[in-house]
Image (tube, rainbow, N blue to C red):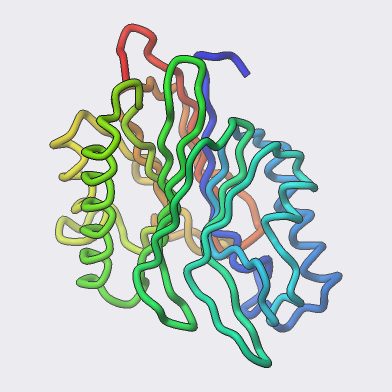
Length: 265
């Protein structure tokens, strides 16, 4: 990778079930077939950092396959980080959340679940990656799909975390964070999560979010834009696109970035 270029991808992998409605309908070989399709996509897209949502670490419904470990090996990433938001013990265990695959060293990580629900809990995974000329924070975010007010509260939790992290570290030599994920809200609604976060970020520095007008859900006939990547001013956006892929019910979003070497973090 050129030191001045960076490729970011975000994708909700839907527990490895592909386009079916429930991962429990698949046996282990079926889940692995779907994971191999995702790995092929990742190898073809070749992101430097991939942020993934609905990633299982040890869940009964996809045969207790550790999805992130499987994808890391199959797609050839040097580094990974898992963040568990939903955990349930017992005869039918669940353990899943957000995952990051990276070709850049991960020097720090922190996972924040929004609650303690044993099914469907959301949260965000914060990671810091080593770049030759600074440190790159990346946020992998998954918001509630039912309630607009809950999404706003969850964005406020993220904002509070970012403010506290900035105060704690001072953030000299740190780029502003790239924020990726499944927002479960559309970008044109002024009172929903995407615009709420965007207003906060614009108060910090100039940001853009992608895809602009792109549709990511459902994958077989996308009509909604639910998945976004927020990019700060330190990066020139060379390209952004929604990939046509049928590896889950969401389409991947990819951005190609160029580090603005005239700007310091």
